[in-house]
Length: 196
Image (tube, rainbow, N blue to C red; front, side, top):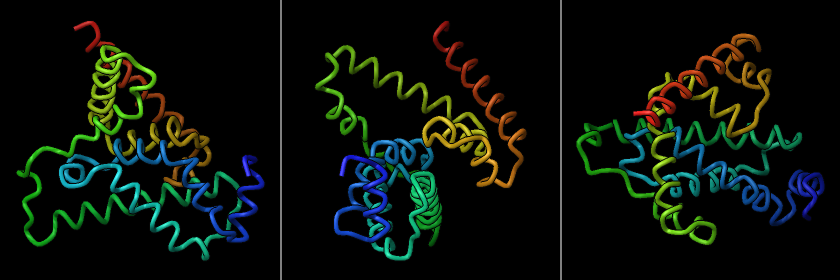
């Protein structure tokens, strides 16, 4: 079952464990995506791990309805579900006069990330990696929603410019321009911080 094509065929036949194995392959990038895309409002109340678990549960509950048309199709389904989950949770925390904006700080997912990294890093390397992650997250937060979505789709999800354009209703050229400007802005922000 290590071969992705075999795994995808098994999932398309809805064989036990196949969809779970697909999710396991994509879980690290899903958690990163949720952490970078959910926003402060949601992350003040819920961890990216909890959001990922909820997305996986939705995928598993609806697996019988999905047509598995390749890894790209599965990724689109996974990240579209994640975006819907983020939107739902954002609306939930804004509804009924909940004052989530003034609540306590976000749960510290850094400790969860640290647990995964400890085997690879010394304590000082781990501290540097955590600082780098925080710098990148802060730089991404400065981008417009459209720029951030394009960067995440291209760099984290590995979608082509044409696939991103299809998702956003834009031409491939427009996506290329948005990505170029966003990456230039990120480089300027991160380069300026390193010099400052």
